[in-house]
Amino acid sequence: MMAQKLLNKKLKTMSMKILIIEDDPGMKLGLSYTLENRGCRIAAAESGTDGIKLFEKEQFDIVITDLRLPGANGIEVLKHIKNLSPDTGVIIITAFADVKDAVLAMKEGAYDYISKPFNPEELLIVIERFIKYRGIELENIRLKEELKEKKQFQYIVGVSPAMQKVFETIEAVAKTDSSVLIYGKSGTGKELVANALHNLSLRKDKPFIKINCAAIPETLLESELFGHEKGAFTGANQRKKGKFEAADRGTIFFDEISEMALAIQAKMLRVIEYQSFERVGGNEPVRVDVRTVYATSKDLKEEAKAGRFREDLYYRLNVLPINLPVLMERREDIPLLIEHFLKVFSKKVGKAEITISPEAMEKLLTYDYPGNVRELEHAIEMAVTLCSGRAIEPLCLPLEIRGNKAEQGAVTQAYDDLSFTERIKLFEKEELVRVLESTGWKKKEAAKKLGMSRETLWRKLKEHGFPTSLSDLED
Ligand SMILES: Nc1ncnc2c1ncn2[C@@H]1O[C@H](COP(=O)(O)OP(=O)(O)OP(=O)(O)O)[C@@H](O)[C@H]1O
Ligand SMILES: [Mg+2]
Image (tube, helix red, strand yellow):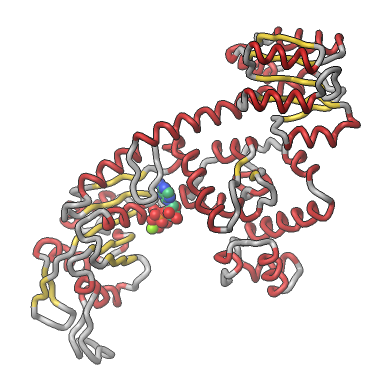
């Protein structure tokens, strides 16, 4: 079997130190043999007390212990070991009848349990999962340490070289009046960077005005930006100040600048060059002192080449580009983003210390995030709201992420912990999410699919504690 070969190789390279505590001599021998064969270093004991003694002498990466043992029982062994060495993974072996105790063991911090009879492969899979899990944990600790020495701005999280460069650029230019052009696909944090540029500037106490060029029709945008004189067009009953005047001494952020109409681009060019313009229908020059920041998800150079964007304006804007890569190209930022959003949303929904199960973490770390940081943020927000226990399970993650390289398993464990009513409730929640996801969170459509009224759906969403931003969502 290919997979098995791979597994053997992995375990060998890790050369784990494993302590086996098992009173059945045959079982003890069998386990030792299997694991030694895979390159693990093994010690074994036949009673709880002997096992503890061995552990006190030297540390082990993993302890595999039977529950029913002479001397101290498995739970006592577990408590003792977790006390001495919280990082050691304890795997419990139970007889079928002891499943209750196994659940207790999980609560006491066991990594997993495995029921007799089992074949060695099953155990190897659990061990491999633990090794992966611990790898992720260690990586997290390393990243946290690293982060302490690195700069962070204004709630922007990132340890990747790309993000560190972004921070450096922000720091270098925030206090100048240069225009900045922020490049990035949807959800990569463009607006966050624009905010930071303003908040760290000398203009921070002055207005910060945002304009989404894609959202305002061309006919309105000009007067919106530059204002108009009385009688400039039908309906212009009095003089109106535009955003440029409103932003005087502050910052204007032009989002989706590529969508600005060519005619208005010409006028923009003049404002940037001379800090002066005329209101629509007027010929008095108005002087302003504004700093401009731009964002685009399109390649402006390409747009200029294609004649959809003025080339001269492109050159004026592109003096200080800031590039935000898609999340897939800076995966090392994912663990910290997860931690950041966990904190934010746990606090927001009034839950304490929510963690993520290794299985859910694996899904989150290996997913591709076409929606970038925003998608990750939403996933964590949903999960924090949905998860009923202390840890987020894959079940609480959005379908796309949960279905990512489907490898279920530990879900059932958490499931076993729940009462029947709780399971039904969880199932209901999960059904709601599934159907809402399939309709793009359109409640009306979802209610129809679910065969319930919108009111019932709304009540259920509230009942399950969905964020108000979701339960208030208009169709
Ligand atoms: N590095 C980051 N650290 C923390 N939060 C982030 C980061 N990047 C993005 N976010 C969060 O992700 C969400 C999306 O970010 P933002 O709105 O800035 O993206 P955008 O690039 O402007 O997207 P769009 O092009 O769709 O408008 C926001 O809620 C933001 O707070
Ligand atoms: Mg944006």
